[in-house]
Image (cartoon, rainbow, N blue to C red):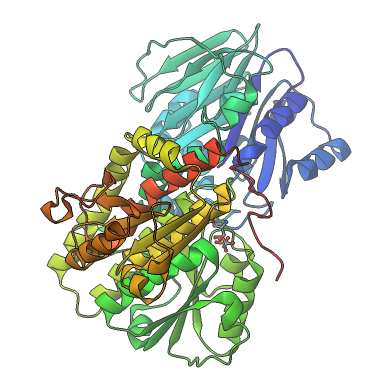
Length: 608
Ligand code: AGP
């Protein structure tokens, strides 16, 4: 996620700002920049890539001054280039802005500003703010910022400075965390307390709608009506390691608990409630071209391959287009049938997986249109695909994929909705799916609030040498994903199977030592699943059942039950993933595994 640091005080700003950016590196970023306000006005340095590149730029071309702002960017709009790095400035360089969040009406604002003569130099939504502040600047910087923000839709955490209002920093937040650090005659702005903990533990966490003005003499906080606001000064007691994980013991746990907001971010600005469809700006394929697609291939690896199986089910059921899911490592060496009416969907959290990249290139070579469902903006797959859908799930640090998986499934539901509503899906059915998607963040939160139930279950089964995960329909891939989560972080052997497949072999494994996880929401195949639970129970297997309502049919068959909220059948894998992520996490912790970096695994497999 992007990082912001600001400083105003008696010390030279540059080293403090760069050190603050370094403290934010763990959040993931792909470019960095700094702006200093001094006797020469606003001086800016920016670099794509790691902070070390910014540092070498600054050592060859240093900037003096004791007021400044700095930023690490996790690209959302526009590739991770120097040009797109923050700070963004006006044409004359006199106003500099750094921004976290997404300005949803950026394109509209950019068009209007361009019509009024503003010249843009980047592809970002953020640059709009610099030009808007310039245009509305009459009296003080803070008044211009407040006026500009009144035109903005979306989320922001910003820090702004202007040559025409020297000796001042302005900060504002709406939906993206921002805080003030109160030092000894010096003040800081930061998106995350880890950036300034070396200098002060006295902080003010800004609230949504707050605007803060910092000068050498102190600070004031206003609301968007420019009325003075009271504030609470807090003392930070965390240590740095805790802060980077947001107080969670591991990045994986933090990312599991981020899912209500990351699922929301994947959908943000993309649901059209009235029309019962989805708006996907980056597909780069017209509706007519989508209507001309007569077959779909989805290719991926690992967890992304599991979401691909769910996408296959969604797309075939609602668009009636034949869909084939291929392991990327298999697809690239087969002689697949691909035509110019083939849509190849490429799913990859990192956007750098070697097999997936090669499979996409093979599909392109054979004439397919390619769509990348990718989390890392500007990654190779994102850049080389013909178009795509960014997950907007923020950097996934834990090697075991969690929030990326649920965002992949949501992105596939959005794509399915759009394509199906171009075909036979009714507006009423489309609205149902929109409503189902909108309910997901709250439903995921309901289950996260009961994480202790999964921790107790983990205590019960932490020593089991094997696990089976069983599901049907949309939840067969969810069973595969649950098994992968467990095996990759706890090193317990776990297998996912279609529940009906039990009697074709795996049932020989069932005994009193075998825990079997059933994903059994009340859906079209629930009754079939009950008989599978009976088969396991009859052989003394331990039955762990994820249900969605009271089920008399399961009476006396369930050893452990976890209740999930009810949703549309096609969305149940998003909900089922959460308790299974938590079960795997707690078992792995209890077994002493290195949860965030499990043995033998890499976050992105960039080699064959
Ligand atoms: C998921 O928990 C694993 N770490 C792994 O299977 C991963 O999903 C796979 O390597 C694909 O990665 P990608 O999504 O970045 O392409």
